Amino acid sequence: MAYFFGFRPAFFFILVGTLFANFWFVAPFGEFIFSYHDLQVWILNFCLGFVCISLIEYLQRERYKNKLLLLVAESRYLILLHRDNDLMKLLKKDNHV
Image 1: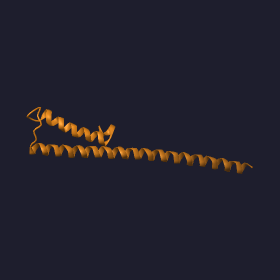
Image 2: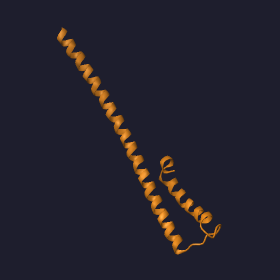
Image 3: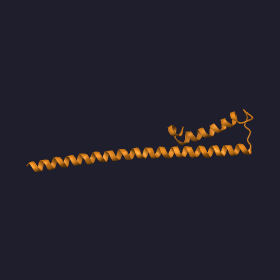
Image 4: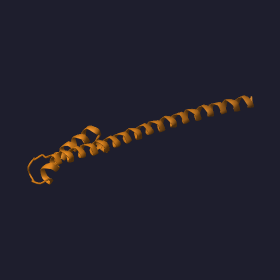
């Protein structure tokens, strides 16, 4: 979820998913009953989800930054290549005159 849509939708998904998991998969089923153990499970789930979402978001930003750096390096290489070709043409022209 975080990989495709970003931090906010993924965090919302963690919140809603934790609520539904408590409702459907924790005994007594179909009821919201909270105890100290449930609070520990919720906190653990939120912490792990937040860490995973944060890491995915960080890696996405780094990947985008590297992509931009690659484009900049490529354009600088092309500029350097064009200038070098122009200089070679100018030197060949001066030597043959």
